[in-house]
Structures are given as C-alpha cells and as structure tokens.
Amino acid sequence: MDSNLRSIPDFPGYFVNDLGEVWSTKKSPRNPTGKFYKLKPYPVKKGHLFVCLCKNGKRYNKYVSRLVINAKAGDFVDHENRIKTDNEVSNLRIATSAQNNFNTGPVNGSKSEFKGVFWAKDKDKWHARVKANNIQYHIGYFDDEVEAAKAYNEKAKELHGEFAYLNPV
Image (tube, rainbow, N blue to C red):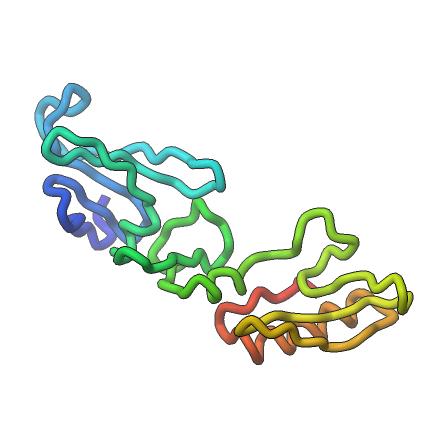
C-alpha cells in the first residue's frame, strides 16, 4: 500500500501511490469502518483505467494516470511504454498533444508493420516520412522496408526527442 502514498487534491479520504493504485478511507456500504482499501480501476474504451471518486454526494470518474502524476486540466499524460494500463509514476509523463501523438505506434491496416513507412506504388519502393510541427518530412525511398524503418527512427529521434516512437528493428 505504501510506495509514496499521498492524498488526492480536492478529494478528501482518497489517496494514490507511485504504483498507480488508488486507495480510500471513505466510509461507505463497501467500507463501513473507514479502513484503507484499494479501489478497483475500470477500463474505458481506449484502454485507459479510471476510478470513481465521491465528493459531496456526487460521483466523479477520474483517469488513474492523471491522479498518479497530478495532471492539471489541459495537460496530456503520456504512457512512456505505450501500455495504457501501466500507471506507475515511472511510466507517466506530462506531454503536449503533439508529444503524446509522437509516441504512438504504427497505423493499423498499413502495408508496412513500421511507423512512418509506406509503400509507394508509383516508385515501387518503401517511402519513409515523419511529421513534426505540422510539416511532413520526406526521408527517402528504400528498396528494403527495414532500412526505411531505420531511417524513420533516426529522423524521429532528431525531431521528436524523448517522445519519439522507435520502430523495433
């Protein structure tokens, strides 16, 4: 339970720790004595976890990741390892919307298994490209899909820094 247990601002009787666990001492039918108990998180559509907190008789659904790092309104929370249910503080960081998007994987349904790599039918080659600051950067055309993915990785590191998703090559 410990692991730097701290209270959740604006929600008396609720606590969160660095492991991504949310605890309560609120008296309720489920906890009539007011002892510490761990709340069960629930998944939402895109895989993130939320918990229900009560205050003044009203229920509030809160994302666990936002509670763990005390994200402010307007902040984006990025899961560094891209596993949305891993809410350990070491896996979470505040990001801009763009930085959060940099850390997404390949597009489902693409001909390539790699992010930033597309089949250029007219050239009969693999096309590597990356976007940053609303600018599409053409990296080049490649005979080999893996070489295109490696070229994407290098440019993504340069443009996206620590938020770059790197293809596993």
